[in-house]
Image 1 (cartoon, helix red, strand yellow):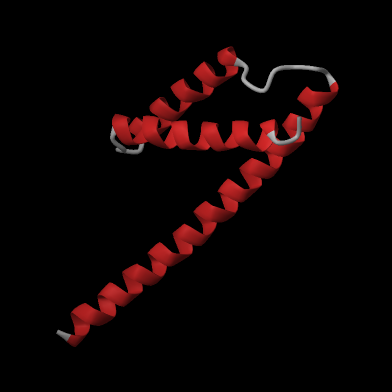
Image 2 (cartoon, helix red, strand yellow):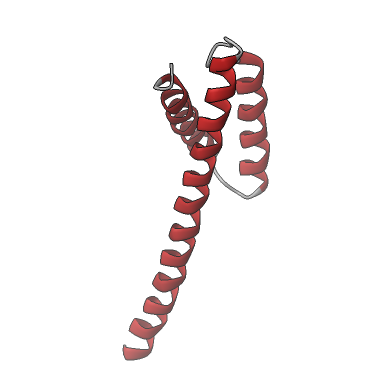
Length: 93
């Protein structure tokens, strides 16, 4: 039983590391979204660019399914990230 606990703790530590990386990547992505928002504001460009959103959504689906992730999960994740990116850019207006 102790071996199983130790093994669980090792895997959980790895998950914690991946979670830290994931959150750092999301933070970096939203900083880039902010920079893009500033550029859009200076050029009087709308926050949502539907062609770009569709392109990114398709890329999420392709990359996600190639990694064995469920399509409905990928679409929900895309929606959350896109929504937050729009919020970040919108607050700059």
